Picture 1 (cartoon, rainbow, N blue to C red):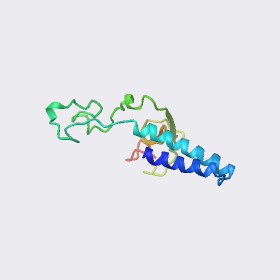
Picture 2 (tube, rainbow, N blue to C red):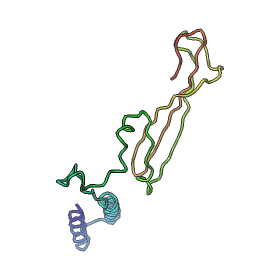
Picture 3 (cartoon, one colour):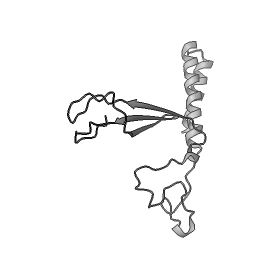
Picture 4 (cartoon, rainbow, N blue to C red):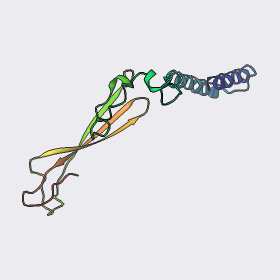
Length: 151
């Protein structure tokens, strides 16, 4: 991949030396080549260690994968993040509260009632930085209604 980028860079330099490229295009292509080189440096620097799963090395001769959760932890609903994997990343977190105003069980106005608790759902997008958006839904309900009310 790096060789292909360098080949493209060389061809572009040849076109520049022949004055076949407009100045605006030159700035754009140079910026894109720089960005592409940066992406390659970030994503291709990591190398995969040889383990019993991806090579012929027997399991007794490979180190245990510390980043993977133990089997007892792998099916838990809420797993803790291993922030060591993201030591060079920035994390932007936002929390939005979704307010409940009408009971779907009986249709009563419950906007002035005290919040009994919250339910959370988290969406994680990783785009050169990890963005965590959390929506908190209020949990309320009319005592005589049979349904608890998250939104």
